[in-house]
Length: 249
Image (cartoon, rainbow, N blue to C red; front, side):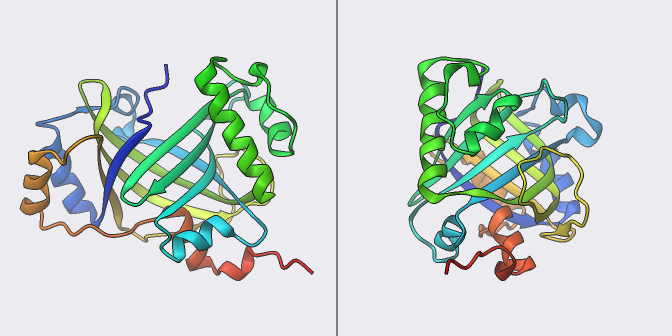
C-alpha cells in the first residue's frame, strides 16, 4: 500500500552534520525509523527524482517568483531493476499547504506515458480509481506544459515516522546532488553531479494537522530557523538556468 500523505505542512531547515546527529537522538524519543531505512547503512536510503518541466522552465520560474499556488512534476524511483516501479508525482503548494498526488507505475510504461500515450490501468501497479486519477492528472499536466526531463536529483534520506504512519514525519537528507538530464532514464549514477547544498543537511518537519509541541521544543533546543531548500530549483539556479531553457523561435 502507498502510505503517502496527500496533504500536509512542511517546515525546512538547513543544518550541519553535527546538529543532524543530535537531532536524530532527539527525534528517536518520539518517532520510529522508517522500516526500509532501519535496514540501511546510516539509516539512509537513496532517493532519485527526475524532474520534468516545460521548454521555458515554467514550474521552476513559478517557484523562483514565489507564486503561492504552484506545482512540480517528477518521476521518483529507488531501485534500478526493470521490475521496480516508478512513482509519477505531482507536488502542489497552495499557500502553506503541500498537496501530493502520485501514481505507482510499471517502469516499462513510463516512456510511452511521457511521450503522450493515453494512460491505461495496465500501466499501474495498483490499478484502482485513485491511482488512475493521479496518473491522468500527471499525464494532462505533462501534455499541457509539453514537459520533458530536465534534471536528475539524488540524495540519501533518513526518515522517522509516527507509529508506522506518515501523519508526523521527520526527514534528514544528505549529499543532495543534481545534474542536467534530457532523457527518460532511471539510472542511479550521476556522471558529473553538482552538490546543491555542499556539506549541509536538509531537515524537514512534516505534519498533517497542528505543529506538534515537541516540534516546537526541537526548534528551540537547536535554535533552528526555517527557510527555503528546494532541491530542484536550487540545483538549477546553481548550475545556471540558461542551460535548461529552450528558446522558442
